[in-house]
Image: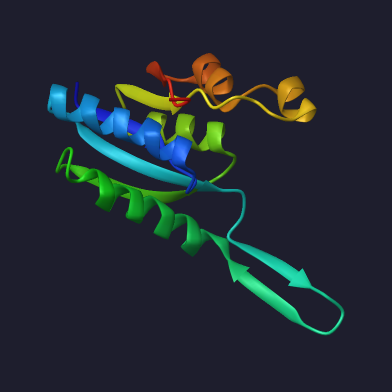
Length: 140
């Protein structure tokens, strides 16, 4: 195994899946690539008096970098990046682009009715991934 990809969003459950990915990478001597997905580069907020533009791509990059830094105590060969797109699409496209051998996703419970109808990230990745998918139990 050469490359494992995992996605993070700043949540504890995503970090739990990333820890599993780091352990798998260490055990198999694979590289680990941590991504954080962002639907767009910037978001505009306006309250009538103020207009603020937030660089969400930079925030996603920071989330991925912080996770990669935290995971280096488990395995040293880690890269990170922000990827434009919805989480499942970003994971699949990066796996295709980089030729990943494995995508690790968490099994975070789906909370909203809309999410149940649309399906979870794990389900979407499992259906479209160009490689194996490992679903990490993150509810511990």
